[in-house]
Length: 360
Length: 165
Image 1 (cartoon, rainbow over the protein chains, first blue to last red):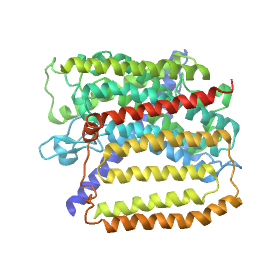
Image 2 (cartoon, helix red, strand yellow):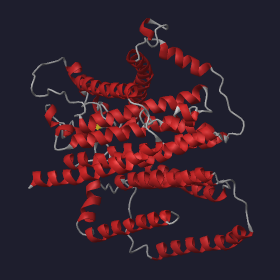
Image 3 (cartoon, chains in turn blue, orange):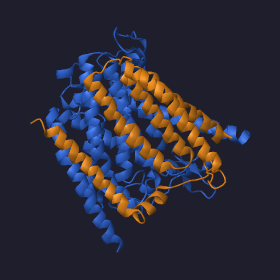
């Protein structure tokens, strides 16, 4: 009994810590984005609150909490409240299956660096056998947050925004799912941990350099940008046409929840790209350079590599936002269905031939 | 113990969602209740250890199909439906029909209880591998033929959509 309680308490602690790390990263990604976009546009970005504007996220958070929580007349109240909750909850759910390192052996059964991973008695790690599918499922359900927000707002801009969002996410989900099939075939597993283990070794073992998987990576990255509604695919909230799209009628913390959900989804997309294509937590020079670290640092070293790769992807997100203009709606649909989808299917055919050739 | 508690919780959620689907007057509310039903079915599969089927249930039904439902309802901006004479008639015929079907299922299950096999909650852990092996070996032909069936449905939809031009 005591053992069970201890297990549950540790598990809860792990969830709380990891969620807070993510939320902190989300807050500071907003800061980083404003800073970088500022530099790309030859201005400074936030500078007033704290050194380099570093306290800006905290000021923003306080402002979001203190603002009046408006409930416009004519909205469908239960769904209007449910929509941001759904968006942020689903945005954080995928975090449960993402592995970000091996084990910290000092922590015993819960030492696996993954919320839903547990260390077996022999030291190996048990994690969900369909981890990748869980992420895809959560992503596909994530549409409802945006769809319901637009519909329940009872406003034409919101409705148009959410219609665009649903159509876009359903269209790009196909290419997103199909682009990952090649990697699944190469590693022969849907468990994220096994997919990463299959890429152990120096950087040329990473899936992105195997076969023609860099094409799959390109498809995945493009589809992921569309799934997270980021520039150049941010039509659901196109300011020039739709005011703010699906969250036009939202204010204060409810608006902040959509914001958090969008950035949490960016992190999930970056995590999947890192795990599936860039060797997860493995160092790029693994096995080439020998060095020894104290035990705890050695256990946390993979986390460093994982975080570094995530940072690169977040940086690319921001870089692309500073570079590319928004697609037109018909271009978006034509690109998704006529370019990405056939390319993804061709990639599956080529990869299955490669896998067959490799096994013969 | 925990399995039983979870089963009854999820089953209650599933039934409540199904009843709410019928009681709600607004199409969006009904569609959302159906999503709850699909989601709880996925959880029941998960409870049986069928993780792959559970996730496919979520991706295909709760994700893809229901998103299209919600999308169409939003696009048409369908309002609250009124109870017509037809829907009252459906109630009069529907309620006894449901009772008859439930009675029949219970009768068949109880009368065959000796020949039917039991599945314990959480005892049957089926991996993706277990699903894939029979699907791509013994049942390869039916599986591929089904995909042609779906292709025909897609072509039919395209033909219907293009007729106006």
